[in-house]
Image (cartoon, rainbow, N blue to C red; front, side, top):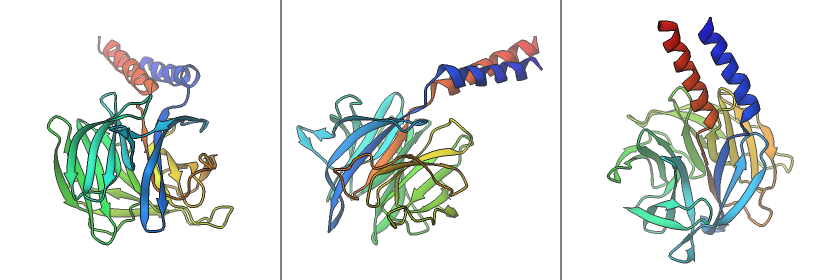
Length: 278
């Protein structure tokens, strides 16, 4: 009984003491022959309100770059710089957008990324050429590539939910992905057109932990919009629309910073459990 009350107290304190979760985003532009090109803009937003903080252009060695595959882990913001020959894994400065090189993956096009237990998981997707899940060990920067068994678009992202299930958002569809076998399982799709008549095209996706199954997306077909979903439902709720009027379609990505409240609640729960055992 005491542990239940402690967890209930944690939930109330979390709801009043902490703002919405911080989520970082990348947004690139495009041209008629390429899905994304430089420059790419780094921004952040509040996962609850959708309020956006514009940060900076992503730069590497003083030049603006095409960037995608954003992930947050080990108190670092990771991303991938894309060029015709491969993808460069970088550490991104959260205040300036300056990229520091960590590793280079020849022939890869990393379009979505997430972090878990010392590894980055990235979607290596070159449409009509290959589609892989890359697992990168951050202690060595060594990578393994597992082919994904179903075709997916290069407008995509992935993240783990609270239960440890790996989800993939691509175009208007949501799937689960087995990181060992590469088996992709369709779950649902957002088939409701937008007010301008355009279909949904989600390029960024992250669970924000404020509610079980709540995920936020960056949608980039026509205008750049932030939306939310309660997985596995494909029912879309607008969060903040047309956040970058100067950009066109392009690509983008999202990465959530672990919420302080999550660790706070877990700590109180563990404390209650220990007290009950005495």
